[in-house]
Length: 269
Image (tube, rainbow, N blue to C red; front, side):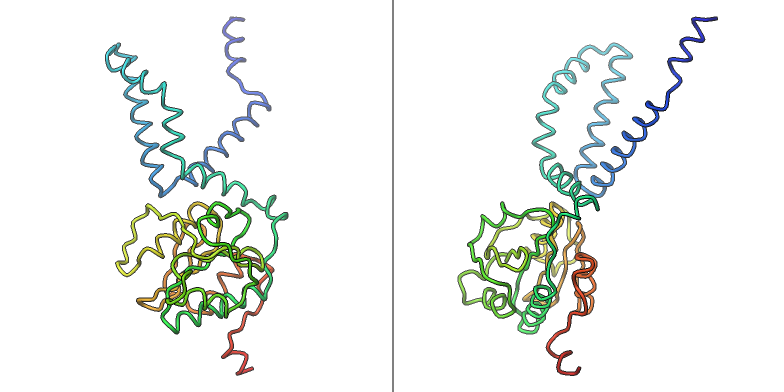
């Protein structure tokens, strides 16, 4: 009887065990949120299927299948690092987007946001394609290095000049960090998510790709449709007007963007 009671006591979790279980459950839940609607989720389901097959092979002593799967699992960790590399980068980047870390981030000024909104509006009216990336907490050094260093103060005139088709830097993305344009003609990662709208081209795929891997706020102007789109937090919103763009900027940079007004609105005031 005492032996049975001791076994039951071993299975009874203490308060430390409950804390550990809660932490692990929270981490697993956060991981599933990061992986949902990505190709990593399908791969994770595939790994789970193989684990189930391995369990069945051990139960029924299927030596050939068990040996093959054991050999496969030996290199599983290395293979996972290679296969899930984009998702791991995205997960690690988003872990730094919590409120605890945001307190240390540099704030965007209202003047910069105002210049960017005006530039997007002017580019849209002129039907000039563009990608403008606003850096937030996650650094964009690796993407800035793929382009040409500019190091100029952000202004509507410079942004519209860069994307003018006759200029050498018009093809690619402009990366803005704080109140400075760090690079132009930068190359961004293309998303693996299928875009159902056939009017969306490489610019939109690149914008969404960066928004999936970082916390950057990306503005896209289509030269074919003149529509303004925004990629942020792994989502792409197409057909954004200036009022909606201002609202999205307020959400991306809370407390830093107030009452952005376009030239036409200033004249009416």
